[in-house]
Length: 347
Image (cartoon, rainbow, N blue to C red):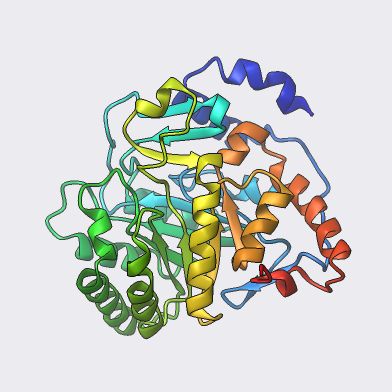
């Protein structure tokens, strides 16, 4: 695979420069032509729509919604763009992304850097998505009213998104995670429900949560999500913990940790939420997915579909195709007719 040949060259650049180069390559269609795998064993349904496979690109890579159609061409079943804030935002000072190669991980403290809702909204309108597109929204750093910023995102994108993700879980925006508190989550989702009625929109709402919540909070969060008929929950965002067993010196950097060190933590959380929610709300599993076996672990624990980002940084852009092919074999070997039959089968 060509990525393995050029990977050492790519990794000579700092992570944010390498990311910018990747976006440019995708934008100008410098992607290998590949025949996409289509197999009924791994096709699935989410948000009332069929997708060819359960592998999604997590928010954070295509922050400004520039290359989502390129990722559909690379074999991703769905793509989530953002996080997008109402106003253009530079984010935190550089350097703000760090590779931890020995740990197959990244740490970022980007701080919702993006071009803002107006520019990105116009871009999506002029470039209709060729697949299931999620739009991840959040508040500006200097906002006086975080809830109003979420409502602005809802107003701006409800007609452009197949689903909208309410990001309350980034560790890099001050006090954002306080929305996990019962009263604040209740207030946020109540305002979103009211705004949806005013807009007369049925756009599915997804909530992306932190992996750093306490176990005793899970029941309350589930209760509120069910009450407000949230369509799905993303488990989980990056963690600002889990540093003790890491090898790379960059473990000392402040920010959100993603990749393999997050895998077990997110799997445990997925399973706990799945047992409480009992299929009332779908789960999108994220954290440490870089192979079919790691994707299958999340599905067994209760995720209907999965997302990845860091895995692609280390494994290359054909990761969705690789995982799809191997998932077909896993479903066959388990004697299932479709991958959806394997959701939540962990004993």
